[in-house]
Structure formats: structure tokens, C-alpha cells
Image (tube, rainbow, N blue to C red; front, side):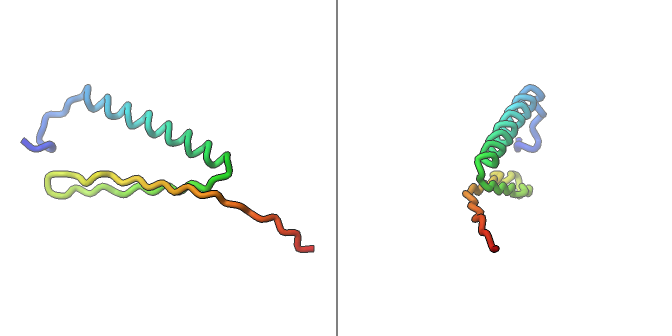
Length: 75
């Protein structure tokens, strides 16, 4: 039986939902701290598309860079 045809396991689903929620909260805190430290954060999430009998691995890309703005006095 393929993964898509298995009977849903509510307890497992709830566990996965909890893990995702906790991970998302931790990511939000990390992004907030990075921005407060003056870093530029870019987050890209690839859309997962069903292919055959499986889904590709989700792709989350995070870019972090230090942005320095020069204060030029043009008087």
C-alpha cells in the first residue's frame, strides 16, 4: 500500500503538526534576533508538487547578510 493510501494516524499527525509549529516559532525568533542585530534575512520556500507516488523534499533556503549603510553628509 502506498503512503497516500494509508489510513491517517491522528496521533502521528498531531505530533508532526506540533513539531512544525515549534520549528516555525523558533525560526521566527531567530529571524527577529538576526534583524535586530542588523542582518538582512531572505527566506525562500519551494512549493512542493506531487510527482508520481511521492513528494519531493521541501526546500527552504535562508540567506543572511550584513548590510552596512554609509551615512554620507552631502553638504
